[in-house]
Image 1 (cartoon, rainbow, N blue to C red):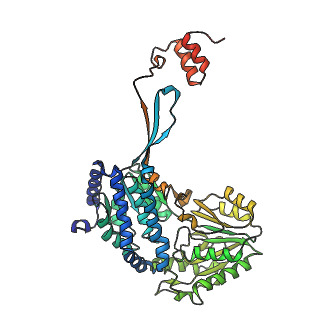
Image 2 (image 1 turned 90 degrees about the vertical axis):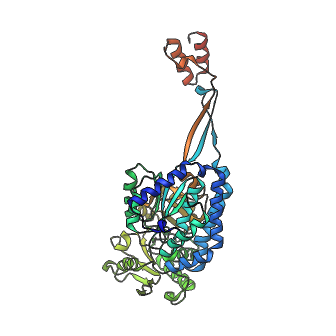
Image 3 (image 1 turned 45 degrees about the vertical axis):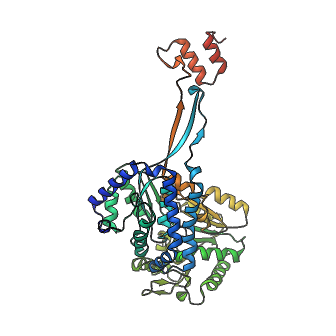
Length: 488
């Protein structure tokens, strides 16, 4: 990277950056299949050649376990890129659609075209995957891209700034590091699309900045993802899947991690015992020493999570865990039972290793409870009851639903990943990423034949009869109007 590129971004440099990228886009080179494929191959090569450096960066930022780094970030990123490379020619093809009788003879198609210059602002909790995944989609769609990695994961941010320009076209794909001033300077510019992953507070700032230029956005936010556990389940399997979805997902620091459990009062003791057994099995007697748990990302987030634990309204509600080590930024996996709805932990997204359990008399009450809150990014149900499953799928509005497991829907490239309401706007993953960064351009092709004089003034009574019949699909009426016979 040149010394000029390493200088902090201010308003003037951000303006120059966008102008230079727009020149690159207007050259037309990003529109070709060859250019797009070359960039995607470069990203795959970067992942293969620099896997160890990526893992080291993730460990430096989050103490993320190596296997978790590979499974949840590196392998998913490579799969995303490989899928895009495999399907790209098909995705780029115009989609033929039916034409209309009034335009006969003609043909119609929908042509995907790149939007232009796009900005991607990524998150710190999965700092590799959540940065490179949307970049892959934007490149596949033929755009030029600025990636702004999260400064809260500085090692991964620096890794992108150092490595990505070596593997892709640096005249079209840029990495900008920095904090709030740099992000603010970027947001002052006119973009053709912005994708942001983070929280709703910053999401509102992003959307307000985009609105000044009428720039469309994809906002991947979050919220409180509920887990409903019916008594009619395989409890051993359910508890393992809840535990790994919560604490095996960056120690709860994931937008789709289970945020709270809803179960019945009568079933809660059995569920709690099963969760404790799974926690002990996965992370040992002393989870604070487990190498299979990430740490809290920094002291600010540590203090935020401790504020939940120290809330007077949940005094006496901790039934497992609760240990903390501020120096190591570690908090043990913690279960809480029957926390009040007005407690801090139930009013804010937890984004950490705490899992409250709330109880109801009847499991179907859980649906009303979920729907009384802002729409979550994900919602989970464990049950063997098909009627309950059908009702849950039909009645609960969330970005995505998963039955009898947690977080696995995120890994399916054939499903869109995105929120609804407070949990986000728009979606991506797989073909949905290509679509998110494309404009579906409508094209109608006609020759100079097929002239119909009735479309032109003056509009005589006979022309009006003809047009009315034609637009109504009345073939007999069309024939009668042409030969001048009145309809009886």
